[in-house]
Amino acid sequence: MSTAISFENVSKVFEVGGRRFEALTDVNLTVDRGDIFGIVGYSGAGKSTLLRTVNALERPTSGRVVVDGREISSLSGKPLWEARQRTGMIFQQFNLLSSRTVYKNIAYPLALAGVGKGEILDRVEELLEFVGLTDKALSYPSQLSGGQKQRVGIARALATRPEILISDESTSALDPQTTGEVLELLQRVNAEYGVTILLVTHEIDVIRTIANKVAVMDSGRVVEHGSVYDIFSNPQNPTSRRFVSSVLHHIPSEEALASIREVHRGRLVQIHVENRESNDPFLSRVARTRGIDFNVVYGGVSELESRLFGNLTVELLGEDRAVDAAIGDLREVTAVHELSAPAREVIHA
Ligand SMILES: Nc1ncnc2c1ncn2[C@@H]1O[C@H](COP(=O)(O)OP(=O)(O)OP(=O)(O)O)[C@@H](O)[C@H]1O
Image 1 (cartoon, helix red, strand yellow):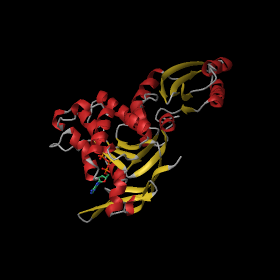
Image 2 (cartoon, protein in one colour):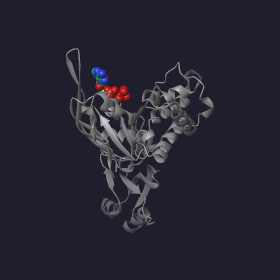
Image 3 (cartoon, rainbow, N blue to C red):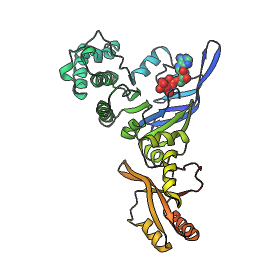
Image 4 (cartoon, protein in one colour):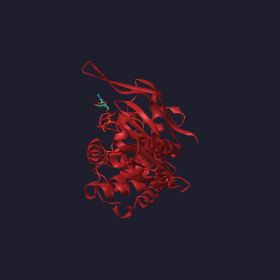
C-alpha cells in the first residue's frame, strides 16, 4: 500500500503577543492511499492545525509533511498551487460563495485552473449527479439545507479530481440524519473515485461510521493511533477510552460501578469478548468446572467491520480459591481484569 500523506516529526508553535503556544508536538503519522483516516480529539487538541498542514494553509515550525511524495511544507508559488489542486478540502461552515449558484460554486476551481467551458459543463454535471443535486444547479446557497450545502462543498472539492480530500468537522453543523447522509457520500467518494480521505472531528461516532484508521490527539500530540477496530475494541490511552466509552457502553462508568458494588458484593471481573470461531460457552463451562456461580452485571457487545467485540462485567461467587482458579481458566480464553478494590480504576480490556 503506498503512502498518501506522511507527517514526520511535525511541530507547530504559534506566537501571539510575544507568547509561544505549541499547538502540535512531534506528530508522526502515515495515511495510506485509499484510507479513510479519522483524527479525533477534544477542542484545542490541534486537529485543524494538523489538517491544514496538508495543503500548507499552516506550515510546521519543524518537521515535514509529505503529500503524494512531495514535501508540501517546502513548496510555494506555482508548485504549491499545483499541489493544492490535488487536495480538496471541505469545511464545517461549507464556505460556499453566496453570490454564486450551485453550478458556479462547483465550477469555480475549474475556472480558476483555466479549464474550458465545455469541459467545465461536463464535469459539473457529472458531480451534480454524483452528489444528487442536479435539480439544484441554479439555486443559491441560501436556498439549500445544511446537508445540501455540504454536498455542494464536496462536489466543489472534487472538481479538480484530487487524490486526497481533507475534511475539517464537515458534519459538525449537521443533524444526525444529515450527518449520516453526508458520511455515506464521503464513503462513495472514497470507494468510487478512489480518493483518500483525512478527516478531523470531535465526534468519535463519525470515525466509527466511516473510517478504517484513527489517530487520537490530545494537547497537540497523537496519543494513540491504529485501525478503528483495534482502537475501539481495546483503547489504551485514557483519552481514547473516554471517546470510545462515550459511544460504546461496554464498560461501566465509575458511578455505575459504585452502584453495582452496592448490590453485588462478590468479586468483579471484566471479561473481553471478541468474535471467535469456536462457540465455546466458556463462562458457564468455567463456572461449572470450578463450582462457582456468576452474575453478568454490566456489559455490551458491538459490531465493527463485521467483527464482534465487547466487554462483560461479571460478579463471580464462590470460595476465593475456586474464583482464583476460574479467573485463571478464563484468562486462557480471553483478557480478564479483576476490579478488586472499590476505588480501583476501571481497566478497559
Ligand atoms: N493562528 C493561530 N494563532 C494562535 N493560536 C492558534 C492559531 N490556530 C490555532 N491556535 C491554537 O492552537 C491550538 C489548537 O487549535 P486547533 O484549531 O488546531 O485545535 P482543534 O483540535 O482543531 O480544536 P477545534 O475543534 O476547537 O477547532 C488551540 O489552542 C488554538 O487556540
